Length: 221
Image 1: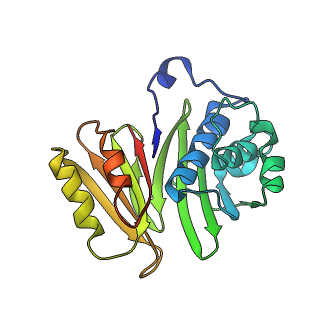
Image 2: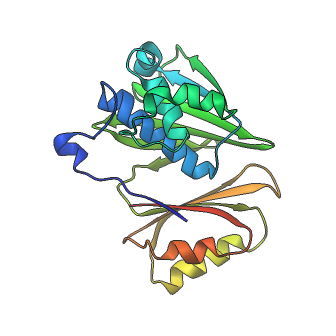
């Protein structure tokens, strides 16, 4: 079970971080770590598509090392962040940066495509300032994940009945679902659910994790 918490204090004093820019470093590290949490494990390779401001300054502002550091599970203030590219190489993770010329919905946008064996996940993240982020796309589906609402992200095997089992657990805990997005890599492979609830429900994670065919549960509030 893995729980990830983001604090609104960033809006007042800014995040504790390694690097020159909250948007380009702290926010980028958080995007990378969210992708890691959704994927549930370290990928074998990642293609990183950078847009607008990220594309122009990703080396100079440390966006490259921050994104990869987050993908390795590091926080924005991790002292190892500056060595993340070296650590990724030593761990066998291939990294490709692809600056793009086209416009994006936000100047600080990045699309990360992570792969491990037959598994593949595409996530688009936006760094909105002060270390805060949004996730706007998951496997081609438009979503709006801001980390300001209690949210569960599950990775599980695509078998019949999984949605019902998960929603039954939420119902038993009196957790009201606000929005729910379901996507899968392909029939019979890995599937993902993103579930936003009205009130914080961290205790549900253990029950969700205990379900058969469940690989990973991440909780954000």
